Amino acid sequence: MKNKMNLSEKYKAVRNYTEEICKPLHTEDYVVQPVVDVSPPKWHIGHTTWFFETFILKPYLDAYEEFDPQYNYVFNSYYETVGARVIRTDRGNLSRPTVEEIYKYRKYVDQAMNQFLQRDVSKEIEELVTLGCNHEQQHQELLMTDIKYILGNNPLFPAYKATHSKERNKEDFDSDSNNKFIKIQEGIYHIGYEGNGFCFDNELQKHAVFLGDFRIAKNLITNAEYLEFMNAGGYKNFSYWHADGWEWVKTNHIDAPLYWYFIDGKWHYYTLEGMNLLKLSEPVCHVSYYEAAAFASWKQMRLPTEFEWEAASEKINWGRRWEWTESAYLPYPGFKKAAGAIGEYNGKFMVNQMVLRGASDVTSPRHSRKTYRNFFQPNLRWQYTGIRLAQ
Figure 1: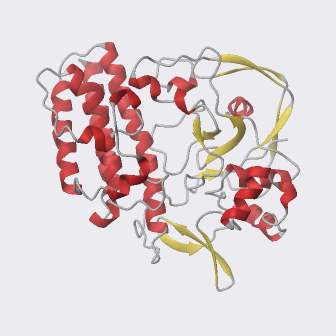
Figure 2: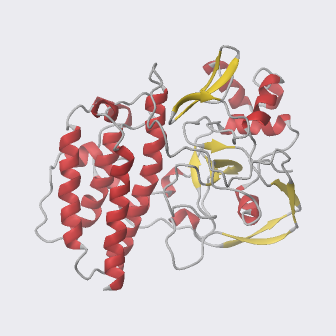
Figure 3: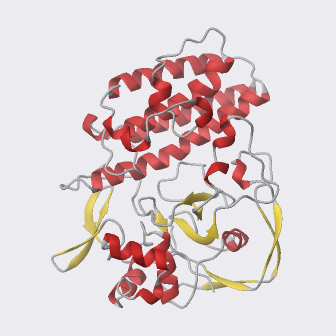
């Protein structure tokens, strides 16, 4: 009974937190999709609900009646096993179903799930519910980043919340401008998750990796340090950039991190609280892998590999920004995809992406760990991404 109640309580807490994130939004905010990588908030609300309906209620709850058969087409993200779906670029064209209807859908599924979780459930179902909760926590962070992009591309730069936003400065963060480098000794380190808690399949299997001596920065690069790179002509000198990165800079006319604006002779930065003067002591944010690698090259250093990052994780300050690593997103030795649609969760994306480690200011509570492997294409920067140096 204790495990069952804990599972039910976790489900409710996760679902409530998603709705808490959306409380400051107006109806119009739910529908916007400025670019392909950003999904409208109402799609997140529907998709995370669809996950529980599709993978738990429909196969395991007797006599469950699907809320609307069309929703499988509307809210399926990338699961080929489950059938056809609206292409990602068209999510912003879904004026129907309405926000009100999607919340009715969410309430309908929650009622069924709450009833279902009062029963004794198998280990297989418990694992699926736990996966669904962690999946929704991933979307909670995406919700925050997507909301910021939607509002940050509004010409009025409106605030998500006037005060006490998810992005407020954390006073306990060590922003010591005298960034120290920590030496990590050569040796064999064991990488990957091992334990009885939850992890995603891409964190398995734990394996040994040999690392040579290296040094890694204790803290993240700050806005002040990144501004030095910009003032030194960092965006104008091809020698710091990968070829793809230099082409990206020229094609897109990139000359600063995302959300930076030079106004009346001063740098400003769009935050969830609206437009503010750039705080120089804060860790730089919203940079691409291309920018992170170019900055490291300018400093005559490099980014850490994901294995170096994990080996050093107990000695560095992390949690404010997802940190670009020098590692391509690849399977660990012994990695196996699960059967069916669940097997499409991570493995199918192991190509043309770079690994990020850590967490961010908008990562959901209790959703970060040192073995977590995030991953994005090297040009993307709408996520809360930062830079740590190694040598």
